[in-house]
Structures are given as structure tokens and as C-alpha cells.
Image (cartoon, rainbow, N blue to C red):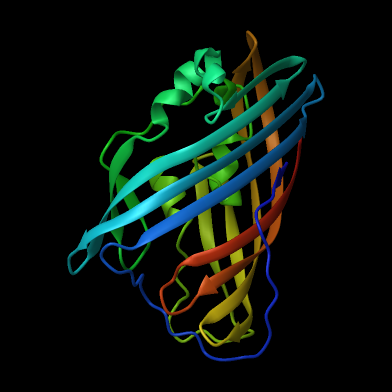
Length: 255
């Protein structure tokens, strides 16, 4: 499995001081994301490519939160699951009648109110979580996307726009956070500040996760044991806590 976004390299060492997200009323943040998965499950190959562009419009703020409107403006998906192919492109009118278009088309241009916590970056959408699509349910790696920084929900995508560096951290410092996709799928992320130049910090991230899960795939019950490792690099604005660029590659093995 691979997630490809963007990467950056910077140098110099200055202490980071961002402890919360700092945005302005009326500010618009464009979020672009690209996810590529190449999966060999032993019973067939699954290839999946997803590209999206979203806009986060900051409407208001109080002492704790930002009130924003999230809009998914573009979405394209291509799936090849063991010989069964499907695709959708929101910019192609003819795709609206496809199976994927019927389930995803209503998301395009829909405004969703989102509340963003200033100190954590956690986001809560006004609408309930969107039910998983059939192709996601058949994908044993779908639940691990948070590990790779690719959440599908409005709140998840919004969170991917921010990264808060703990106060007082400087170039060379590291810290580790635990990750739990489910009770049976757990791991950790280790961050290291590679360099800080002015208000831009380059942070390397190494993730690992192990666990088991059960899925139903084309009428078959499958037990899967997974081990995942992810390496990547983040470019963060230390003044605002905006995540400017992210690049991550994940290797997943299992049986």
C-alpha cells in the first residue's frame, strides 16, 4: 500500500513554539490529497487510486474552537479489484450515472459545518459519519487509512490540514503517540523534528501497527493478520500549525 502526497526538505535548527492552530476569520484553506493502494491479498490483486480537492472556509471562532465550512470540490476514484473495474470523476458529467457516481456524487459541492479544536486539531462534522462504501468494506486496509494520514470523512480530511508541534520541541527532538484503529489493530507513531527554518519545520514520521481483523469479501469470511510500517515527512507552518505538505509510503504485510 502506498500513499503519495508531497515532500519537502529544509535545513537549520530553531526551536518550535506552536501550541495551537492559528487561523483568521474568512481564511480559506485548500486541501489536496492523493492516495494510491497496490494490494496483493493472495487471492487477487486490488489497485485503488483516489484524488480529492477540498476547501475549508473559516467562518468564526471562540476561545476553544474554530467554526468552519468544509466543501469537497473535486473527487476522482479508480478501482480494480480482482478484475472488477470501476471509476468516478466528479468533473465528468457522464460519470454521475455510474455506481460510484450515484453514491459519491451527492458529496461534491455539499457544505458541511465543522468545529475544529484549536489546541488539538480534532474536528467534528455536523453530519454523522458517512457509511462505508461497498468497495471500502471489501478492502481490509480501509480501516488503517488514519495510520497513513488519509481519512475519508469530512472531519478526518479536515484534521489532515493541521499538525501541532508540542511546545518547546526543537530540531532533533522526538516524541511518540499511540494509535488505535480498533481494539485489535493498534500501533504507534514516532515524530522527529528534522529541521526548522524560520516558521517552517520538517518532521519525519515513522509508524508501525499490528493486529487482526475479519472481513467478508465476495461472500467469503476472511481472517487477516496485518503488520504495517509507514515512513514519511511533513512540512509544518510552526506559526499557524497548518500542515503544508505531507508525503508517506506504507508497506503492509500479512496473511
